[in-house]
Image 1 (cartoon, rainbow, N blue to C red):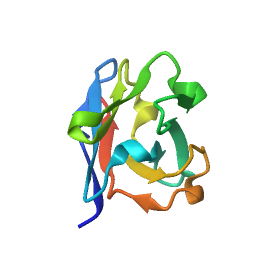
Image 2 (image 1 turned 60 degrees about the vertical axis):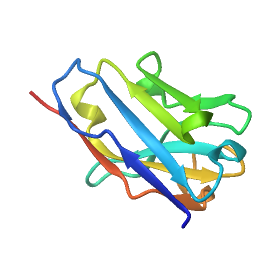
Image 3 (image 1 turned 45 degrees about the horizontal axis):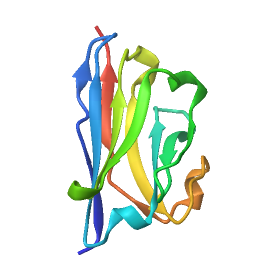
Image 4 (image 1 turned 90 degrees about the vertical axis):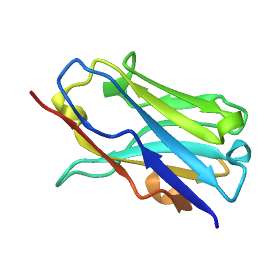
Length: 122
C-alpha cells in the first residue's frame, strides 16, 4: 500500500514549537521531492517549504523564514517540518505531498497525505 501520513499537529501556544512528520510507506521517499503546504479556513493553499530528492531546499514561505526548517531522515523514510516561534497566523491544516520536483504550486504535486491540524492560540 502506497501512502503518506502526516503527524505531529497539535494545539500550541504562541512562541511554541512543533515538529511535523511526513512518513511514507509502500515507496521510497528519498526518490521524490516533498513539499509542505498549509491551508487556513477561507484561504488559498500555501506552499510552506519543499525539499528535493537530493535534499536541496527549494524555498520557504516568506512568513516562515528563520522559524521553519524542512529536513529528511532517509532511514525512517520520513520528511519533517520543524516549526519554531509559532504565531497564530500559522494556524492551518498542514499537508505533505510528493512528486518529482519541488514547486510552490500545490496542483503540481501528484500524491498527498491526509493532513494534520496545527492550532496556535493562547
